[in-house]
Length: 517
Image (cartoon, rainbow, N blue to C red):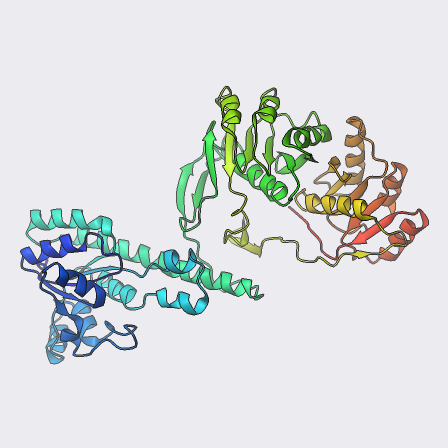
């Protein structure tokens, strides 16, 4: 073990650095520093040598190059037990470094969060800092690297107790902190460039991919009680929801919450959706939330029990009272009135979630990841890209009918395949989800709507993929359904279009499939 006698200090965040440097100087540690850090320490009356006194080179390129030099890195990387290393160091007239204190340019805070353009963002990519930290961490038996403000006090305590000597175990702890930091730092920069490329139409799946997450909370269990589960987050992402009250969220709650918000926050009209097992079992528009909620419930007045309900506008006491009449798992909205929260407080276990609809689509989680066998499947998120829908029948939908078609198309995207939804311009009427045969999904959607005494005359039907035959349209026609929206793309599209024309149906092709598994 060697005693700490010389330190290099270069920090962006200068909190606590004067106290630490003063402590070091009081224990006869020589300090070498750069730029703004040097000025900060000198202003506090702390004696400091400049890095250039060690490198014999001035900072160049507006400070881009100031620490990358053999005289500095030699002093950090030299193995004290290797005489050749020490001879080489003497040859270049450099000095041994015992302590490296650095925190990095705040790339996420300054570049990502402030949404700077690329040419400005790159100025917050630290080069010298990570290099010095990694060099010190590699040579941890001889040099202590310190990269976290929260380490300062413990370091000073240990220094005082051990008179400037540190065990190999303690040194390895500091080294580990460095590699954790630089891994995350590079991850954040890599993620920034992936998002930049995607925003410019370059939809690339990188040749290698890292995910840097921290555990937010353990969950009671996974999909089933015998499965363990936890929720992990990227701590650079802004949290977009807050739990106001209720039990701990479950694994299934998280999945249902995302499905609910993906649907309801995609509409500007006052809307309500009800989710069970990640599938919508009700949806409705309304002049107010209560009407929207009643419309959503009417889709399936049995299945909504124990569901997750989401609104895209502030929830008040009127609809709050209505929802407390039945058992629901969770209620989500952009905000809740104080009166509504008071109503919900009578049901302590009911989860009330306030979710920021402005930022739900601004997150940078652009990939869907699934584990399969001993690997992972990656894909970018299914976003509706095509807007040039094509009316392929002689009969054209009017404005109201087109609104109904768009409503069905937006919702069927979030129903498990094979997926069928039947709706009018106000609400969902029937849903057929997760069937191996598309025609079976049609039959289920029709049967459910009939069980709930909903009138299908003049409604529309949406399908997440093409109809391979006209049999599904035949079933729809018998119930008075007058319009169809589907991707198209079957080799028998012509036969399906002919059937629609012969029976005065209108049909729209979207050119975009939306399977969901």
